[in-house]
Image 1 (cartoon, rainbow, N blue to C red):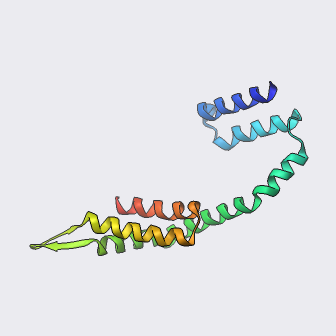
Image 2 (image 1 turned 180 degrees about the vertical axis):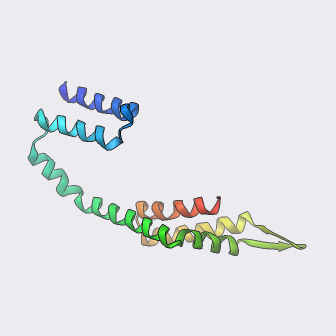
Image 3 (image 1 turned 90 degrees about the vertical axis):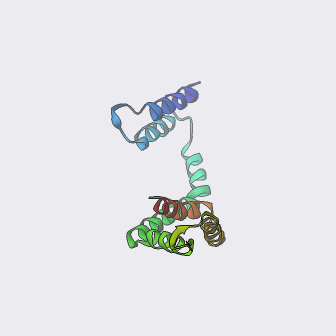
Length: 134
């Protein structure tokens, strides 16, 4: 019953966010109380950490890669190239063909997902889509 109360309190605090504190504060408080009231052993914490440390480190690396690519202007460059290849000229007017745009986006996402997992592909394709439509 205590575990359910801590879980529910943590969820309420996460959604309510009193005092404008960041989300990690409330989730850390929930984890702290579960550990203090000995609802979870340190052995269990070590076991879960041994299961997820590699994927967590990979995700942190992908986030750093995404920030680095943003700082280098990679996303704006790729967005401009996709727009350039999607252009069509018709009777002295230049416009973006939505069919070509979708085709180039599909091809780009296909190659991107061949080299990265879902998280990496999302971290790279989302800023490109935002750059395309901004």
